[in-house]
Image (cartoon, rainbow, N blue to C red):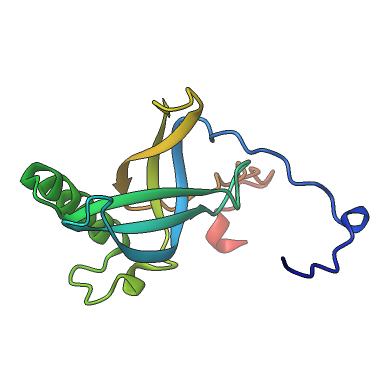
Length: 152
C-alpha cells in the first residue's frame, strides 16, 4: 500500500493516444538506453524520439536496435539503422548514445497492427538528414519607376 494524497478533481484524465499517421516527421532523440533481450542472450539500444513540429509535436515514437543478438541479420539491420541515424545527425563516431540526443533528423514512420491486440502501433522505417524548412519568400513588388532593387 502507498499513500497518494492525490485529488483527481484537479487533474484532467489522460486520454488514450492513437498511433501517429504514417509519414515523415522531424524529430530528435530524447532518451536512449541499452536493455537486455527477453531471452537474455543479447541486448538492444532503445531510442525514444520526439516529434518536434507540426500537428504531432511532442508525441514520442520508439526504435529498438538489436546491436547484440545471435541472429546476425538482426544485428546487421540494427547497425545499418544506427549508421543511418549517425549520418542524419552528423555524428559519425559516437562513443555514447547520448551524443545522438537533441539533434534534429527526419524519420519515416509507418503504422502496423500489433499481433497481440490488433491495435495500430508506430514503427520507424527510415532516418534521413532533416531538410531545412524554407519559407517561400513573398513575391517582390515591382517598383513603378523600374529602379533596380540594389539601387533603392
